Length: 143
Length: 143
Image (tube, rainbow over all chains, first blue to last red):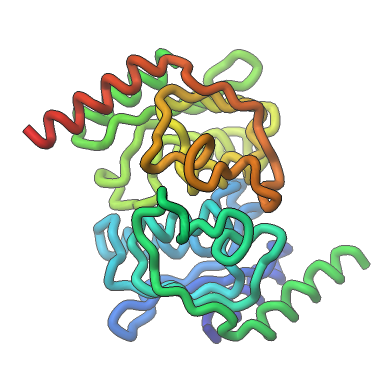
């Protein structure tokens, strides 16, 4: 999660909402990504999406069933859907997101009958650091 | 929708689940895409995602609030989330997808309080052709 928090901090420096993600397989990091919809002019460029795409490209396959995803914020519906499509084994996330999250808020996607793969979910990992970074980012933007 | 159905037919020829998508702005097609997770080794490569990313790249911005999306199948949670992030104005889709759809099934994402943009939604456009193509594809794969 330290690597994901570092990626989130990098995103903040670039003016992106600070969220970072890392994909690990057999104890090795195979993808690291930061939120980048502005820089890439791509509304789908959340950290989780970029990490999943990079990991799938690195492995040359669309299923990541032997991979774990670490992300600093509760995934949204788009990212939760991608996590299910990718067959991610375990999801570790930091801060909860009552406004846009889709794991423990809103659609609670992994509990829906239309969700075809449910990862093991471990919330609250590095929550304080992740939440502090997000709060600081939005406070500075308002200031 | 004819263009989206043509893209779906192309996907089937390549062994991908036949779903096609088109993005229209001011009456002009600015992106056309077919489902391609296998070919691209990318679990996020649904037709809608590829079309949204292509349209955003073409316009150089992450918001597509003056664009309409036509897609042959009811979007899943990932794609519905991306449609909301992209601020798509109108969504036209063909066949309903009781197993994986997230518009009129499962999470019914656009009705969730955590959904921050709801497009106008027009289901059932070209539904018969889209559904016939999907049925034919899965029948042939089982045969």
